Length: 564
Image (tube, rainbow, N blue to C red):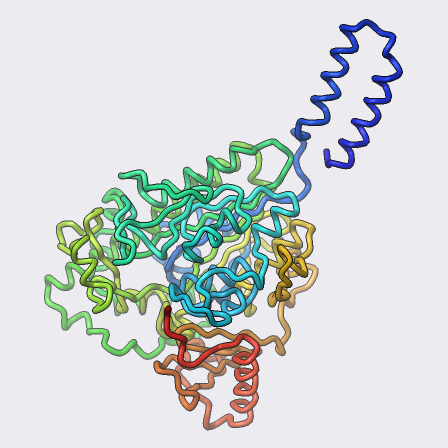
């Protein structure tokens, strides 16, 4: 019952109360109590709510070619089932790193407009504030105002101050890691400035439950939050912001042992296998080829037997984390079925960027601190005391068939899996090859929720959304999402790109130099092997003009402002 209906009912009951004053005092007292209860208690109903729940599942640093339904060899039956009963997207695009992706995902806008022009760096310049700006309204704020319960468990990475906490930005319930990563078993921090990982629950500082495994724990929390308001008549928006399979690679041996020995042939062989398996399931064309190998990757056969042994274990650990992630997603879906909400839940699964190649344990800036907290001994790999990353060689395999990986605006850094499943989704098992971006999700959710994006929030005007709803395509009403004139741009850490139709202008160099922008016809060159800058001068000028306009509109700064 809405507030207006409650007022009408209260007025009616009050009139009846006055008319029967002649009744016994006992009856009058009971009637008065009935009126009080009717006016003060929230309306509840066991009837199914008409608008769907929304479940957003985000994997952290998952490679394009890892999932079974994308041709990977890792055991992901739950996610594969979602794909079988939903739609897979082969050309879904994110930002190249965690925080800007989350800013764009939640705001439906560019990462600079949303305040995350540079991850984990904070300045006073427009676009580089290092937290969600007041120039945007984000999904939980809009959906909460529309009557949705809003929950998040997992990684936030969008500001550490109280005003930036998810609880202050529309999430009704939240348990989050405020940083970009953490130990998966305890509170040990990964960064010198935060020797203990900062967590909050509902905006209040809290600590990790020692021994709890991250993916299991975040799943428990989200289920707890969903149950807290079940059957009150309101739909929910639940964001499972998992930190798996983000480094450090840690998981129980019962998961990684399933993959023992599977990767002993090495990363070059896996990369080639992934290319063929992606073709076999229809994610890429039959004539797709591998990109040029990332500079500095050592040939597998040049490694010693001990080095190969350790490298194989890295990939086994990674596979075990993805296996565990799939199991936990299965737990959420089973719970939704148990409580009768599964059929009325719109589910989106994505990865936040390309496969991760960083290895902070050996980094000049981060390594010295990590050496005081962790080890990389072979016998402890995967344990809470261990800090292991799988690095560029395996990331190259995970990003097959695209060039490079996380951190780059080449396709390997930004073309990731997306699966959509739920009410209104037609064409089960289909693969959609259209160019779509994470900015298309917010308008999709708002159309589902039958609400509009506001013009202002808390007295601040907000920028309009930059994406388009996917619902017309998902329902079969309109196959087209974006026209060939739609322009999508990205910049982070001086690596930049702009996409228009089948063409892409990109720079992956640091420091940024506009003369190094490269032109690719990505519709037929997924691997970005053929730079057409010289042979297509008119297209290059057209794309350069679009890129300059993007830079101006988004207030992009070169070089990136220094942190304060």
